[in-house]
Image (tube, rainbow, N blue to C red; front, side, top):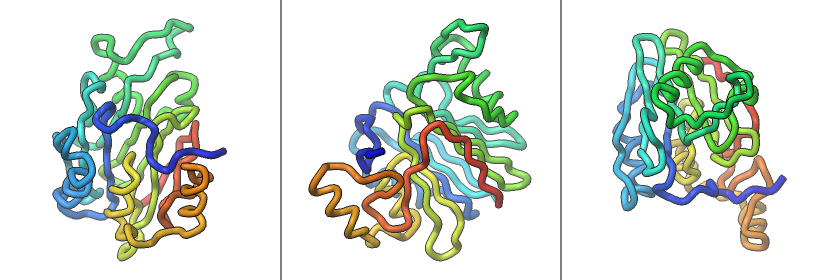
Length: 212
């Protein structure tokens, strides 16, 4: 399939996150996001530890908690999906308590997300003890998630903003010339490729586990 290299959502509309599995200060991740999104929304949430670091820019359309942290887990939910797993009853995630329920499901690592949710969303769960990560995308990749590896440490880098992921991974100068020509000709890149070598689009309807 062919997808636009950046996410199709409008800047500032939904939230964005940037995650690194390298234990480091989350400030550089926040700076990487703010460089591209600071004009529409500030970096409002961040967390860091031995498991890695994460920064979140909160968009105007995300109601309720975007990032949730417990003693054992970090969870991130981007977008406002429709909940379909309650005996066919469709409820928006804005319903009271529903968003917290979705964070609980993330902590339990329920992977059959197409049985529970529909619509625009992306979700991330980090196990603080093991450092393993569960990355979930919606069935049509409406919220595009990009993945790379740090050029120095090879640690996973994940995020919803293409340029921020490339910058955090040290790949912002690694232009894929074939993808660049594809972009000039059709305003899109053939998935899973992006404008940057070593930065790829996560497949739609996926629940991918990355072990530390």
